[in-house]
Image 1 (cartoon, rainbow, N blue to C red):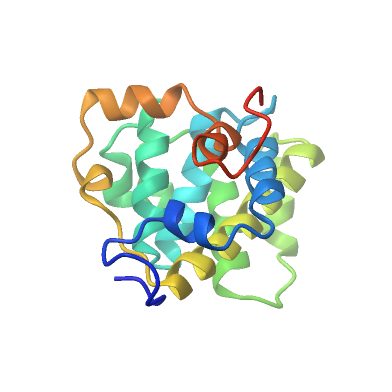
Image 2 (image 1 turned 90 degrees about the vertical axis):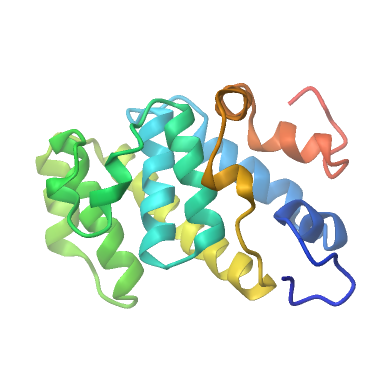
Length: 190
């Protein structure tokens, strides 16, 4: 249920963005820059970071959406059963574990400088560019979780039991294409 009386009972993020479009276009462009542009991280790994931050924050809407996106790009569903309790025990690449531990510290201990965790990310073999990208994704999803929870959004059934068509549709889209489809972004060539 939305916290905005002018929005429908089953409000989705698209309704919120259509009703309050200020800043949506650059926000969606930032999503694409961080989650879809060339990177040392795969798209699946970046979506996994988004899902992990969202799960850590207990943001059911974003956790559902980005678990779905991570699955669409190849992360097995079984990963998510263990991931939030113990990233090191989850069936993911060992190189991703320090990234998720960094995400946990940034998310749960605001104001703490994660010196050890950033060093661990670099020692795992990630570049400084990837470290900055990971920090940026973590920051973006802490923002998005607050926005979604503040709006009172809850996940729809498409996040809980996605079919093969839903997963395939997710692979073929970007955040700015989604925004263009909602009429929020005028240039549909993005």
